[in-house]
View 1: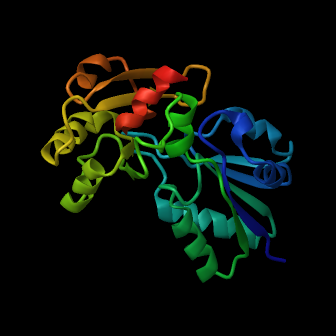
View 2 (view 1 turned 90 degrees about the vertical axis):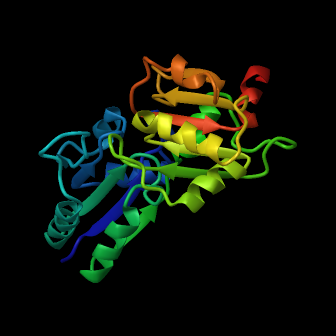
Length: 241
């Protein structure tokens, strides 16, 4: 008998921010394939017999798993008749490759369900007192991401959109901060535009630094991934809350 796969979003960091449905799936798992940024406490909610398999992609690690190996592991365990939970930070379909995994499961006849999670793109700013939209300041927002340590290969049209919309949110952008700020200036953001960087969002060690396009780079010398960059007038709302 073929098993079943749950693609579960674990939320932005705080273990209590997983959904009730996601937690229930985790509690009936036989196998848990989990990512780097999930709260480790969540693994305690899996049954004692459940196999816990780390498949996180560690920055700079030569032994990090390839995505196709993760695909194969999901299918392998499901074909053994097991209930498999693929536990991902944030939401499975927001820069989480959940759609790639879902497509692979579909192609191999494996039943699955997607359990959405709270994305750090929204929850991170929110936990720092920064709304991504605010009446009179921003009627929309956009989110961009890329692997830390890599050059950013966003098309120029995306860079332009990031500078023109009310709020721009960048995930995994610590090592690319200079590039991000440069492109915001290039496409018209004023140097006085408020900027925030939020490290370890929603966790006890959360750290928030605010500045402007002109000043933020000199203020964040002690910020390490994972961190979120928020650019736009909504950053100023933090001072009111």
